[in-house]
Image (cartoon, rainbow, N blue to C red):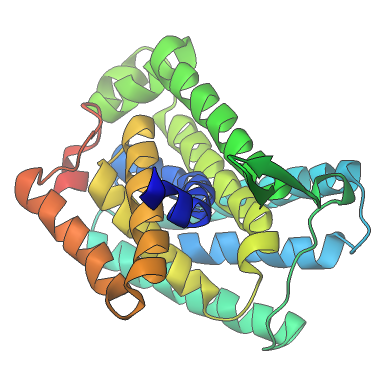
Length: 296
């Protein structure tokens, strides 16, 4: 308890970072695991969401305005995801997918720099969530706790949809055997387009929600993409539970590492990933429905 009391804020920050990483990484995991598309523009989608927050949310914005901005960010992400899906649908080679989406990411970075400049920006938290509450005797921002709650709700919805509904069954069947799905009259391309759109919408939503915590700046897209890839590798492809577990581990290792061993924080993160890969090459909780190509 003495250790927890001394490091409580770092632990709570780890949960908040994990919530943001989950929202961003779960879409990357689902797209790669189900569509077999390596999307290196995923970090750019989250940065677009952050800059949408800069443009739409004022310092004294109400909770309603913030929610509307979040919904708009998700809609923009879904539209951009559909465009990326159309661009990558005919490419079956991971290297070509990576090159194409990397090019898109570089273009997006330049466009955002032209529109918003090179100085770091910060999205204001809504006034209703700007205060703090006591957590085990320590004040902690309400906004960060709210982000954790949002991530939990979205995670539960995704899990239920994928595992307990007809739509989820169609997605799993499309991953397993596209030919069979086409034979019964379901257009697999529409299914895969929907998965890509949802993944991209979560990335932009996560970017906007991360704005009050991480801000918006050039280069943040690369940092977010790297952390999201670590989450996907640790948790396992195509799995909501895997993305959640991976995000929790990465969030705690990152925040506690910076707090306790700042000089070795990055080594701890990638050391933890290497240990997981040695023990569980497919990740901790990979989906049994994930595309075989995604495990290559």
